[in-house]
Length: 365
Ligand code: TXA
Ligand code: MG
Image 1 (spheres, rainbow, N blue to C red):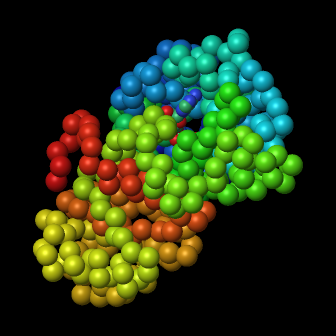
Image 2: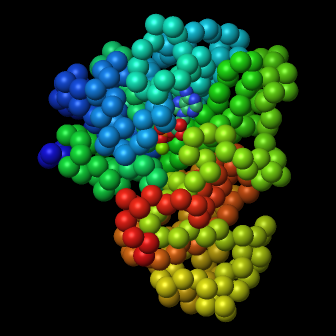
Image 3: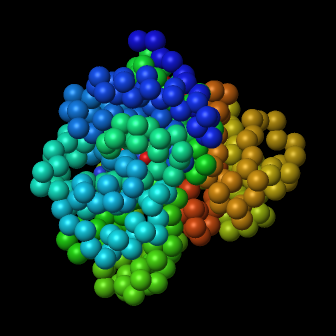
């Protein structure tokens, strides 16, 4: 299949160009499209064969459900069985945005996207092109991240093309995704509020929004995770959590340390021991890079460890870029767990996880 890249300006001045995309989706084809978190691999949620094609293209097990993307809270609410003050509060605070809400699905909602579960996850992308496409179709788009299963999610058109060339008719391209990591997933099922995947909205923001609405998060069993809690809470809670995921081909290592000096000595120890790997690459802050001045290896930098948006925005891009440089090992600077730092560390830890690599990802370099 010939894959066309179609650039849509975020000012939507060439909106008519969405016409062939919508037509392809109406015919049951799967397309890649941009969102503010990462690029998605989408199909009309109500066409079973089209949704099954997503699982095939992505190489995703059929029992791993997909989330739906809608254009307004009012429309989103119709896919769930019930709607209550918690749902109202969370969606009012975080939609549109990098926030997915899982609740029991409406009895009449039939979609293979839910993979046989009685729950469904939905979010409203805060991206003009995604929004326009959903409106154009007039119904929800089922979409996982546009990576081949196990790989880092694409955050720009060329990374999406790397995984999807020849597999989909269209890749809709806009600017690189603003957040760069997937949405926060919250499950509100059976009276229990659980954060299944940290993302663009932090646990603290969720707790604060509930408190502001007069709801005590503790009454819902919700915990605002601290770094210590997070480390203790290592048992898998969302599908795919215990295995290597979001991963480049290279081995990933976390540069540990609470401050610059600690991180520097951590790297230097590995240099001294000759244990950086055959061809190491780095994804570190500008500050840390300055201190490694005679480093002969490929380095990609982000602005500042205090600005978690900067590190998160380029993490997946850096993984792919350093793979293209044929690095055997990628050394990535840790961030603290504030704000987006929790999502960043979650992806980094899974990428660094050693268990169960999918052999279809190719050989280890
Ligand atoms: O930012 C995002 O969320 C991106 C963009 C494209 O919207 N999408 C995304 O989808 O990351 P995906 O499929 O790559 O990740 C969604 C995760 C999966 O781990 C899936 O198992 C879980 O959400 N999930 C989906 N529906 C669920 C449900 N009903 N119950 C529990 N987990 C669910
Ligand atoms: Mg994904």
